[in-house]
Amino acid sequence: MKRLLILGGGTAGTMVANRLVHELDMNEWHITVVDQDEIHYYQPGFLFIPFGTYGKADVMRPKRDFLPREVEVIISEVRLIEPEKNLVHLVKENRILRYDYLIIATGSRIAPEETPGLMEDEWRKSIFDFYTPDGAVALHRFLRTWQGGRLVVNVAEMPIKCPVAPLEFLFLADAYFRDRGMRDRVEIIYATPLSGAFTKPIASQQLGDLLEQKNIQLITDFNIAGVDVDKKAIVSYDDQRVEFDLLVSIPTNMGSEVIARSGMGDDLNFVPTEKHTLKARDYDNIFVLGDATNLPSSKAGSVAHFQVDVFIENFLRYIDGLELLPTFDGHANCFIESGHGKGFLIDFNYDVEPLPGMFPMPGIGPFSLLRETRVNHWGKMMFRWVYWHILLKGQEMPIPAQMSMAGKWQR
Amino acid sequence: MATKELNVSLDAEGFLTDPNQWTPEIAEAMAEEEGIAPLTERHWKVINWVREEAARTGEFPSLRAISKRSGVDTKELYELFPKGPARKIARCAGYPKPKGCI
Image (cartoon, rainbow over all chains, first blue to last red; front, side, top):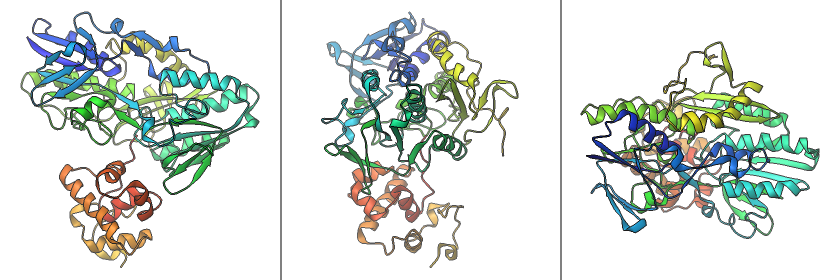
């Protein structure tokens, strides 16, 4: 029996497990999935919790329900990976697992402790995150009775999971306060380390214009050094201060601690990964999928999905002794909620920035790229069903793994 | 001396396209245009570390990596290379503009 071990049963780990049991001969392969948490969270849903659109129960399901029967599932923390010995040490019962191939899908997490002052007295009193279910719920409770003031949304540093989420939060916050008749009592400020609203020029311009229309003030090149807790202000490395009544922070994102403990990560505990093949840079029997990589692609579920497509094809070649093909192009596809039942959709990869057009069928859609429409919003809301019932289970999606230029308009 | 007179290829934003063409004179010229000349021993500490690290790993280090391991912390990096240190360091060290992660 060949042993394949998957660390992480989140979006990437679950998808790849479901695909592998169909593609590999299960008489020859033993697949094990290890995860420390029994609950699978629908992370795109966290964004809606602060505004009361979803509750916590809407975004939680048991992990086991989405993993195939054929795989062994172990709920345990991972103590250490020993890549030179092909061993993984678990906390539970001090078990040691040997593997022939290892897939690291340990994701990324927020690390508010990286920014001085963030997790002190004001944490979850006037400083919140919405990247954890508890943070999103706490923020919802706060917003229900908030009388208004100055809302500052701050991204601590790049990269972050779902780079469009801060913008979506701003748009939804604007709509939320408008609906409650208190928009005139809320000042909304977005302080970002980027030089614009978003990383890529055309989308940055368009989304920046939308911020202006919605009267959201944009502060660019703001690199937070810490929070002045007493004066309720965020302070940058070059001594800019932005005062807040309510701070919604997107803290530094980091890979799993076990990556650091095992000496396999970069400065943010992300695993150095070959850009186009997804093989770990330093190890020939380890692959890295989803948010755990150090790749300059978005940390997002759609990216994990396209990675899994590419990985499966390549892995089947690899175990037959063929070389890996450089087929991962950094493809990402993201809905952006813009409030009041509308949304955007963007589709891009390592080399091509988000462009306007129609998706997935050129000229037909039904989704419009880089344009605000109601259909895009419904796409995002329907996506939760698609996620649980199609995507995680590894069934076919009508979107190719590689980005296509068909249907996109170039200027 | 302006970077245009150095007889090296620059991209549209004035970054060196080939790090192998770099010389200390180029760093000084870039610093001039960025308004941070003359380069001090602390600037050089950063530039030299970054060039060694990039040569070793094949990738331009992140600001976090620079602040953790070059011996110059983030606060000082912002003093030495104000308003966008990553960009200015890359330019002086002769590397292309760091790609903003997405």
